[in-house]
Length: 356
Image 1 (cartoon, rainbow, N blue to C red):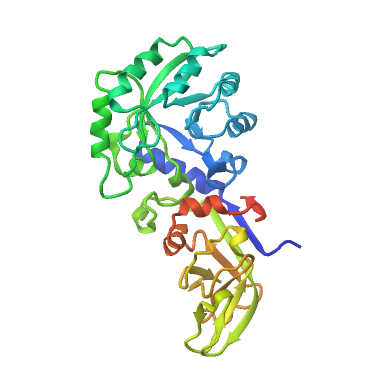
Image 2 (cartoon, rainbow, N blue to C red):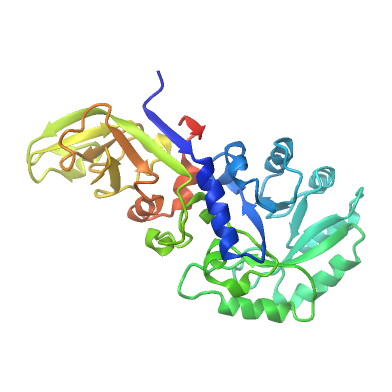
């Protein structure tokens, strides 16, 4: 029998969240971002819930091919573009759209022998300072792309660094408009946060990612109160043992937790080898039989321990929700000093996953 631990992917929640994104950006088309194996949810499992999208955005050629094999005939966008000339053969064969963010990529497209022109998204570095042409070089890059026989439609693109913070997008919007001044074309700027909170940045296409999976772009669960998003993943386990410890006794490796009074604890079949963060401190929320309680002691490779004081009747076999509908993943991530994105992507291959 497998360990009592599983991740459940909720197809209806994915469909709901896509509909929410469309409601917030009703005049835009949607690139549903499914990079990192659909943020850890599994590309094949997420696809049925997201197939009402207008296009998919991802990183890996293998995942793009898999989408085609799943039956997707619409647009697929390679968000980092391509890395070597042989990649362009796959782009051509499977009719992919690609980001172009550098002269090196432009040169490869100019030299490529293609069966048809490739649609591209020409990326501007408007302040994120990762990938893209600077505003000063953007027009020259656009003119070069327009002159390339291997390039079809050119979409103007950038990525916001602070749409989920008080700094906002005004500075980057100004930079983008300055660099793209006088250039006509389809525009794609908005990530999840801008999709929710900055309608002026929606333009022709938006690129929601984390909100499709029911979590907050800011990492704070309350930031999406009333938005209507639903968690697309439930990570759950069971209690496999209990202990009653006296005042002054400690729990786990390093004896990091000391009982301040007699208490009962539950041992949960989940640890950092399953993707639960080892960094989870005392007090990280967890839900046992519908009651919120806390992690106590250090997370082990295969187990973690929780305070059963608020749930006195819970014993072996009691259901434990590590995150899901009863416990927002952002609450867990915030306690651990990380973000929900990382927790989703970190669920280990050994965890059984099912879709419903």
